[in-house]
Length: 128
Image (cartoon, rainbow, N blue to C red; front, side):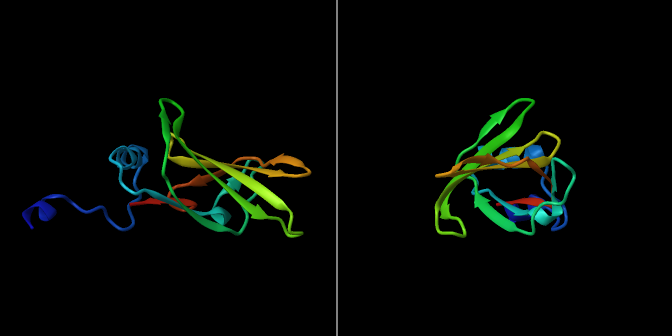
């Protein structure tokens, strides 16, 4: 009971910063990233799509001056029922913003979207 009282709890409205997120990952805490892409902007300054997502980070690479990099790959079907593999690359930059890049691979070819940049905590939140 004394130990819990000695460690201050982070305020609900206070978002963790880059160092705190990296520390949680390095401590093997189950870190999740939750995104609201409508609160993010694309490379041309347009708002992101009206979409929310979540991902538990299972593996990551931290590079000095680059940030924390992690990814997700999943298979799905397009509206016509054709198979699609989607690769989502995440980069938690050292400035505290999250950049996402989606690459879709279909039988017809590969399409890469411009990166979407999300500010923390409005477009992206990290929880553990």
